[in-house]
Amino acid sequence: MNIPEHTPKINQDGDPRVSLSFDLVRADASGKPEFVAVNLPVKVEDKVAEDGPIIAQVSCLGGEQLAGKAIKKRTSACWLLFRIPRDLCPEGGSLTFRALVDEVVLWQREYRVVWRGRFPGLKSAV
Image 1 (tube, rainbow, N blue to C red):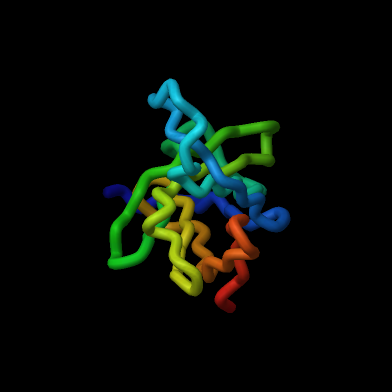
Image 2 (cartoon, one colour):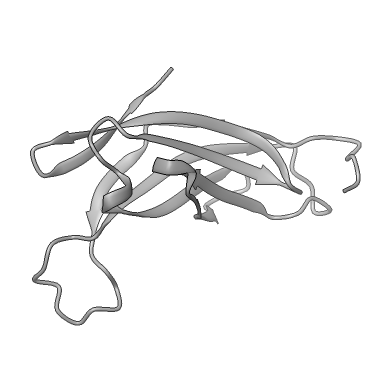
């Protein structure tokens, strides 16, 4: 891994949006939602064309690590999108979200899972 001459900056740019999500493969959507969807807005600064792509990851219950997607909206705005299996999101469980570029963690934040009835939410662990 080469050490870059510059380092992009990634900062959270708003609260996460959290909702339930169904399995997209199943034709029958009448069952219980099986995933928790999380959309995190971030702001990206000083990223140049030579930098690799933004990689989104989340660490869940028991240390399981899942990949997310980074969707670029504008030159500096981006969404980190995650679909986390519902069983990895128990009340009070910990989720650590991160964004990497060229295998370097540039942003990381830990949240606790809260359930308001049947609706999931996240509360900052900091």
